[in-house]
Image (cartoon, rainbow, N blue to C red; front, top):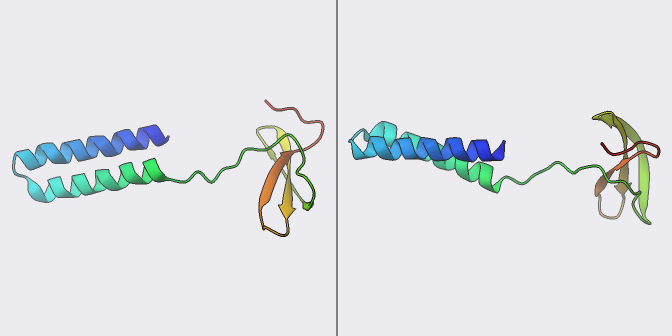
Length: 97
Protein backbone atom coordinates (compact mmCIF):
# COMPACT_ATOMS: atom_id res chain seq x y z
CA UNK A 1 0.00 0.00 0.00
CA UNK A 2 2.78 2.41 0.93
CA UNK A 3 4.59 1.81 -2.36
CA UNK A 4 1.40 2.42 -4.32
CA UNK A 5 0.80 5.74 -2.52
CA UNK A 6 4.37 6.87 -3.12
CA UNK A 7 4.03 5.95 -6.81
CA UNK A 8 0.72 7.82 -7.11
CA UNK A 9 2.22 10.86 -5.38
CA UNK A 10 5.24 10.85 -7.66
CA UNK A 11 3.05 10.50 -10.75
CA UNK A 12 0.89 13.44 -9.65
CA UNK A 13 3.97 15.57 -9.02
CA UNK A 14 5.48 14.57 -12.38
CA UNK A 15 2.22 15.41 -14.14
CA UNK A 16 2.25 18.78 -12.40
CA UNK A 17 5.79 19.41 -13.62
CA UNK A 18 4.77 18.61 -17.19
CA UNK A 19 1.79 20.96 -16.95
CA UNK A 20 4.07 23.62 -15.47
CA UNK A 21 6.42 23.31 -18.46
CA UNK A 22 3.57 23.99 -20.87
CA UNK A 23 2.33 26.94 -18.79
CA UNK A 24 -0.72 25.65 -16.95
CA UNK A 25 0.47 26.84 -13.53
CA UNK A 26 -2.73 26.84 -11.44
CA UNK A 27 -3.33 23.13 -12.07
CA UNK A 28 0.40 22.33 -12.08
CA UNK A 29 1.02 23.83 -8.66
CA UNK A 30 -2.00 22.00 -7.23
CA UNK A 31 -0.83 18.65 -8.65
CA UNK A 32 2.75 19.18 -7.45
CA UNK A 33 1.53 20.08 -3.95
CA UNK A 34 -0.90 17.17 -3.76
CA UNK A 35 1.76 14.77 -5.05
CA UNK A 36 4.26 16.04 -2.48
CA UNK A 37 1.78 15.65 0.40
CA UNK A 38 0.83 12.11 -0.62
CA UNK A 39 4.46 11.06 -1.22
CA UNK A 40 5.79 12.54 2.02
CA UNK A 41 2.82 11.28 4.03
CA UNK A 42 3.28 7.74 2.75
CA UNK A 43 7.06 7.82 3.11
CA UNK A 44 7.09 9.13 6.69
CA UNK A 45 3.94 7.49 8.03
CA UNK A 46 4.62 5.77 11.31
CA UNK A 47 3.25 2.25 11.28
CA UNK A 48 0.84 1.80 14.18
CA UNK A 49 0.16 -1.88 13.83
CA UNK A 50 2.09 -4.20 16.13
CA UNK A 51 2.04 -7.87 15.18
CA UNK A 52 1.12 -10.38 17.86
CA UNK A 53 3.98 -11.96 19.79
CA UNK A 54 4.37 -15.64 20.63
CA UNK A 55 5.72 -15.30 24.19
CA UNK A 56 4.05 -13.64 27.16
CA UNK A 57 5.79 -10.47 28.37
CA UNK A 58 8.02 -10.45 31.44
CA UNK A 59 7.49 -9.10 34.96
CA UNK A 60 5.22 -6.10 35.47
CA UNK A 61 2.82 -7.10 32.68
CA UNK A 62 -0.81 -7.95 33.38
CA UNK A 63 -3.35 -9.59 31.13
CA UNK A 64 -6.26 -7.20 30.58
CA UNK A 65 -8.91 -9.83 29.92
CA UNK A 66 -9.39 -8.46 26.41
CA UNK A 67 -8.98 -10.88 23.54
CA UNK A 68 -9.90 -11.02 19.88
CA UNK A 69 -9.47 -13.27 16.88
CA UNK A 70 -7.18 -12.06 14.14
CA UNK A 71 -6.74 -14.17 11.00
CA UNK A 72 -8.11 -17.19 12.85
CA UNK A 73 -5.69 -16.80 15.78
CA UNK A 74 -6.84 -15.81 19.28
CA UNK A 75 -4.83 -12.85 20.58
CA UNK A 76 -4.84 -11.60 24.19
CA UNK A 77 -3.97 -8.08 25.32
CA UNK A 78 -1.31 -7.40 28.00
CA UNK A 79 -0.71 -4.07 29.74
CA UNK A 80 2.36 -2.67 31.53
CA UNK A 81 1.02 -0.29 34.19
CA UNK A 82 4.30 1.63 34.70
CA UNK A 83 4.78 2.54 31.03
CA UNK A 84 1.22 2.29 29.70
CA UNK A 85 2.43 0.07 26.87
CA UNK A 86 0.15 -2.63 25.47
CA UNK A 87 1.27 -5.85 23.83
CA UNK A 88 -0.66 -8.37 21.82
CA UNK A 89 0.18 -12.02 22.46
CA UNK A 90 -1.08 -15.13 20.71
CA UNK A 91 -3.03 -17.20 23.21
CA UNK A 92 -1.64 -20.59 24.20
CA UNK A 93 -2.50 -23.36 21.81
CA UNK A 94 -2.90 -21.17 18.74
CA UNK A 95 -0.24 -21.48 16.10
CA UNK A 96 1.16 -18.70 13.97
CA UNK A 97 0.02 -18.90 10.36
